[in-house]
Length: 256
Image (cartoon, rainbow, N blue to C red; front, side, top):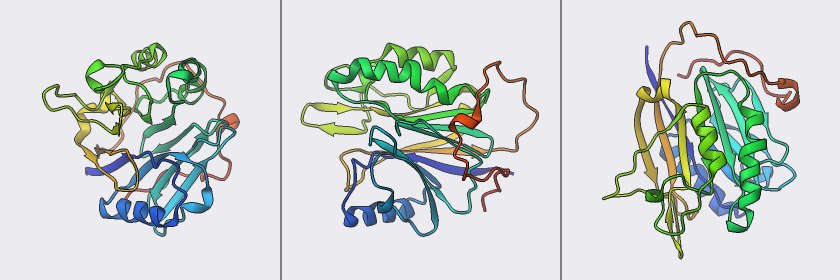
C-alpha cells in the first residue's frame, strides 16, 4: 500500500510576533503539511501548535532549527548539532536532515567549515535513504540566482560523496526561486535526496507565505513498504553524542 507524505521547508525569519505565529500555524494546516522543518527559530515558547509535535534545537548560535510533525507521525530519533544549526530525524525508513547554514559573504569561511566539519556529524549513520533539506545560504548553479553567485565547494563535494540529487530541475526560461530581496532572487532553500528514492517524488511545490520573505518548498514523496536493505556503508555514528534522550525509541507508527 502506498501513501504520500508532504515534507516542507520554510525559513520563518525569526518569528517573534504572536500574530505571525498564528499565521504560520494556519498555513501548515491549510496546506495539509505532514512534517515541516523550520530554520531561524529562537524561542521555543512561541510555537505551540495543537495537533502537532514540535522538536527544537536552539543552541549556542541562537540560530535554531525545529521540526513540526503531525502528532500521529512518530519520529524515531532526534539528532542535534550543539550550535542549533542542524536537526535530523528518522521517519518511516527515511533519514531526514534539516540545516541552516551561516549566511552572507562575510561568513563564507564559516559556512565552508560548517559543511566540511559540522554537518558530516549528522550524516555518518549508514542510512541509504537520505533527505537533506535546508536554507543553504548559497547556490551550486548560476541559474539558481539572479544576483551574486555565492557557491560552496564543500557543499558540492558533500552532495557528490553522498550520491544525492537535487529534487528540482530549474527551467532557465521560467526559473523558480525561494528568496526575494532588493539585490536579487535565489533558490537558497533546496531539497536533496538519495538517488534511489528520487523516483518516488510525486510533486514539488513552491508556496509563498505572507509572514516571511521566503517561499516554502514542499516535497510530496510516495511511501512504500520497506524491504530488505543492502549492507550500509562503513560509516558509524556514536548516537549517544547527538541523540535527544527524550525522543521515543519505538518504531515509527504508520500514518493514517
